[in-house]
Image (cartoon, rainbow, N blue to C red; front, side):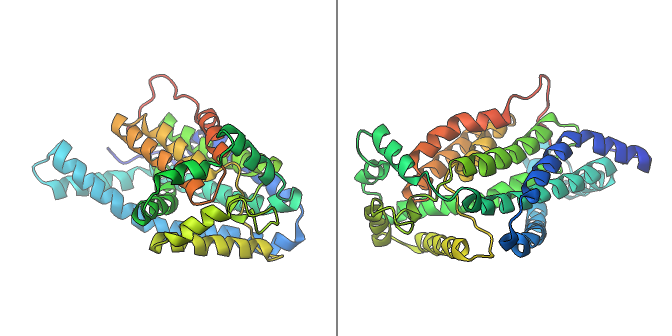
Length: 346
């Protein structure tokens, strides 16, 4: 690929035009969320953008290393050039000379980072706008859908071992790394790729509509905090089972759950508690949908990952089972369908 010789003014206009819809989505989303007054959150909210910047500085170097390894693997087993290092060097130089692609990547990262900071504030507003009031209803719906039993009673009837639970917990924790890797990598995919823009817009809409709007309407804390909210000991048997079979991964889950509860109780801190809908499940299913546009095996792999995330959301006491059923309909609405003739090449 040759370096682009586009004049600066034309480059700016082209990049802005390609990202115009994403700009509108993020701008409207941010305008709504940041306009909602919440004095106790002002100081914490001001740090949200800094946190997003830290995520960028943390993940970008890792992404670069992984992409370089993948390109070397691609050269070795697909391209098979006479000299792999020469091919990789030319590949890197071609990318760096593509000013439109670099500019588009930087703009996309800035927009999604603002969007993620906005979602963090929006999530903290949930208990202020509508304190957790749907937990009992979701618990009852779960029991009605499972013939009078709680979903975890079915899942733990198979008596999963500590190793199985540990694997499920590690998979659930891996979501954070995977979602940011895919998100920031997608920012630097060819700017004319319709799937790239479709994914970025769908990702932002998922957080705006699912993670904030729907989460506020159906405000709930989740099974893990059911008893702490004074709603009874319905999920005490599940928590006891997890404690009995806890390993390193599960202990990490317990620490995170306690930390989120402490943040929720702090009057001037951001809150990360929200059980409906599960953004772990929503975004995992979104990744699976997008992965099918690239390779069949990638879609199958990501579908298995999403299935394990859905399973872990219930077994680790984060979410109600009815949440998973809702995601089957919610995520495809955000992702939509690619335009005819769209290419999935990076």
